Image 1: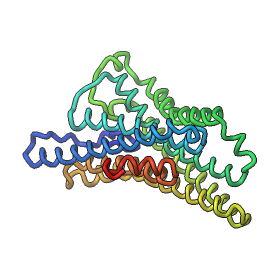
Image 2: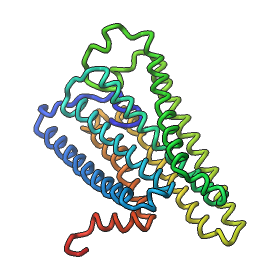
Image 3: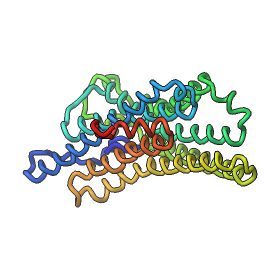
Image 4: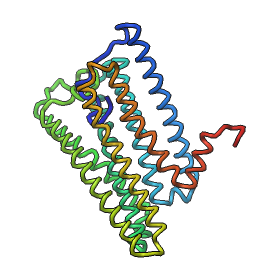
Length: 309
């Protein structure tokens, strides 16, 4: 299951040739998964096309971070789908260095989304509480620095894991090939501790940032009448960040359902993949995109019938 742990070792391999029912069920869920992926990719590419073809959107810091989140989520989606296909559905082996790189990208992109939500909340906080400083804050340099910091912080736990596994790695370890799941690259117990700790710290800190910025924004709305409308809208946006963070955290439930329900529900990993990975990332562009006039018009155009446009 492609959740925070990115294909934990407790996922059971299911052969499509076991019986006819198994083949039908797996084909159904895999078809549904592909349809979700195609719709997601169509929506993301449409929104990114709107972003890159509209100059004022590229100059708006909120839209820059939104576009970055879409790119990051798309990368996560592609990598997670690849891991699902390679380790569970169409099982094949790959070189361990390539597997390590894929697993690193998957976990890093998973962490970057919460960081992006925190930065978007801070941007709303500065826009409402420090409007005179917002112009100086909203520069291309600052946005690039913020995005770079997100990725550096997102990759730090992976670097720590690599350091932890280095003393126990054999000389020929990276010469082997294997089915790519997390169990292959976990050579020391401290690696799981590092990963769990990084996820807990990430979600706690991001939640605190979102709560703090929401309270500050709403206090401004109560104190300054002239800013009530803008502050109220910003407060609602911050609450959407909280909703998105909650959806990201739901991915942890996948590990629990796989652990306790895998013996009762066939193909639980595919069901989890659809509910806990696909659904949150499909809702994200809709939730944020529909709040902006330019994006909203573009999204309506994407899903409208050509003869009715």
